[in-house]
Length: 117
Image (cartoon, rainbow, N blue to C red; front, side, top):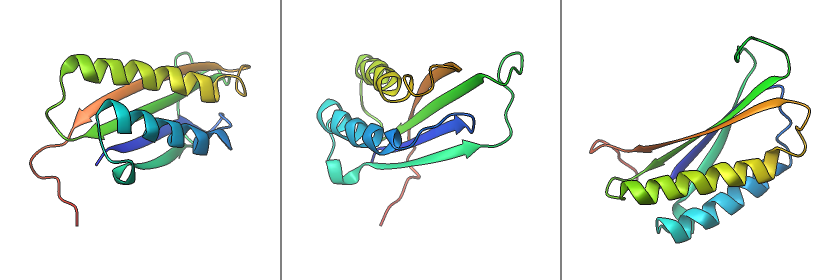
């Protein structure tokens, strides 16, 4: 199940690190949740129009939403969230060191109306 949606302001260069990030995030989730590696699905959304903080051109953001099935403890979700933030920093901060880069992670549980086929 887990779905990862990486949203980012388009003033960030995320390639080729996005592929590496998702591969490492999938491995992390496989062990931590646990889940099957084959069930992890990831994608990126770039925003051409954004306003961050005071609107300075070097303000940038990366926001990761992790959608999981219900039932995991709050402490596990907190641990996974912190590990994902650190992984985001490892993968994206160096190439974008000239930006005021903000990182965030939101973990959401799906509801009973989630279907797949």
